[in-house]
Amino acid sequence: MVIGKGGAMLKKIATAARQDCEDFLGQKVNLQCWVKVKTDWRDNEFYLKNFGFSK
Image 1 (cartoon, helix red, strand yellow):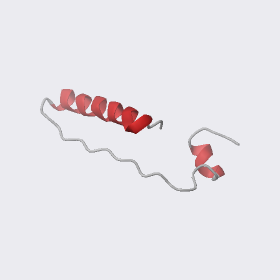
Image 2 (image 1 turned 180 degrees about the vertical axis):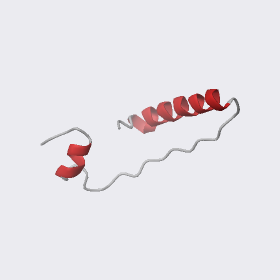
Image 3 (image 1 turned 180 degrees about the horizontal axis):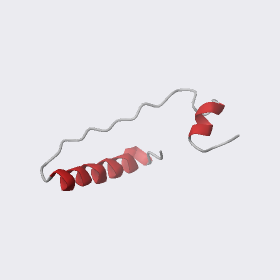
């Protein structure tokens, strides 16, 4: 997932997901999103393949 500068893309995705949930349920929803980044993801072939990248 592309997080974007300052988390802008993550915020945009989370806002859209919250809005979709609210539209579906017909009421306000509190949706919390967070990202945990593994320290060695750039050097780990397994992680890169899961993201669709290859070295």
